[in-house]
Amino acid sequence: DAGVTQSPTHLIKTRGQQVTLRCSPKSGHDTVSWYQQALGQGPQFIFQYYEEEERQRGNFPDRFSGHQFPNYSSELNVNALLLGDSALYLCASSSSANNEQFFGPGTRLTVL
Amino acid sequence: GQNIDQPTEMTATEGAIVQINCTYQTSGFNGLFWYQQHAGEAPTFLSYNVLDGLEEKGRFSSFLSRSKGYSYLLLKELQMKDSASYLCAVRKASGTYKYIFGTGTRLKVLA
Image (cartoon, rainbow over all chains, first blue to last red; front, side, top):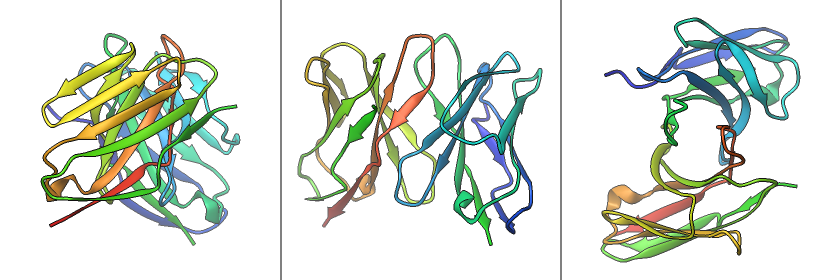
């Protein structure tokens, strides 16, 4: 059973560009949450998707958007990249049946 | 407001016991979670408390006092591989998976 997978592993972009990150949840999970983790900080909640809709959102600007597909996989899109968007982006999946979130390995985004 | 506080760094010796504290002030509470995160890797789940008291899982135990907004993670028989960051996270409400994370406690285990 594959756990949560994310792609790509690393990404380098320049300011103003756009980026799309991808996540496939653990088998049996229907909910996907995205987090941003800056170096030396804890993960910050971006948003959560359930049944292909954004169910909750953290304090992130509209430049951050997402999508969930019928197979529960998800994408995170960031427009007009800023230097401050450089971070590890984590995807976590869970099911409505239990309490545990499983994290993917993350995508390391560097904005130059 | 929402606030989760943990010590930034701790150091302990191999074979010893260490307690990592976490205090929280959040609007809503439906569970406290501890995660371990090795450098450059994703967080991995360690424990979950929703009721007051101690939950034991092998070398790891976690305690919760909801009235005090306080939790701790206890690691026994420390091993070198326990050197990592330990994240305390609060889930805000039932039916939601929005977690508020602390900044993490970086634990160094010395030989």
